[in-house]
Image (cartoon, rainbow, N blue to C red; front, side, top):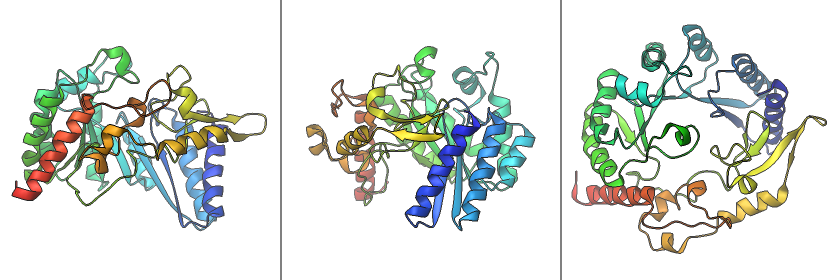
Length: 332
């Protein structure tokens, strides 16, 4: 991402926060590849954002989603900038991580990522681990959780099934069996508890009094700026060759005016989707948590929500919610 695009995005965020008379503003570095790869722009963006927030009397919150391929110097800098919300991708023990997340040259990434996590924890930084399981690794979820427990106790660990998006389209990694995912995930809950780990999955949770209006903020819509300066509501729809680009990409950075230009009709269309309900979801007991599931994965060519009970994530959501409900009613 060019610095001019990053600066314009920050100016817009700060300006909106001040105009709406809010007390805090936040920015997240996520996707587009590895956010810290363009290190100079990443550093400039964090410093500029925090400086602008302080100048306007705002509380600033910075979060980072990273693959963990960081040097000690980079780790020290991130800690020094008080970036407290850090999510690191680690898929499990060495053999799983190296197969699923090789380096750009096809090398092994495990040792660097493992060291990064240890370095952050040694300095008292709270992090969250994000693990993706595939058809080949799904049976090993309990082993993966136990590995995290032995090495990184008392953390939050999010486990998600692999989806065919991003580089997942080219690596050939397949979505795991929903039935095996649910079985192994439930088995892992007690393992996680024994290590003080909070084990989570995005489509279901034990907070039974918690209701969600949407699966994520895609219909608000999210303000996600891609490296090329496009504005999208969804991290997965970052390029125009995506089938749903026309729906989700609703703006762009204009070089001549050095500002963002938005398609307000598309924004209205996205907001309307928040109230659109799939008939099947209205009959489902899990609807109040998953809220219709991930929109980009469950929308048809006409831009309408289109999910079926046979959808693999839908099956996982219902089975895990059923487990959480029964656990609350009858005990673990």
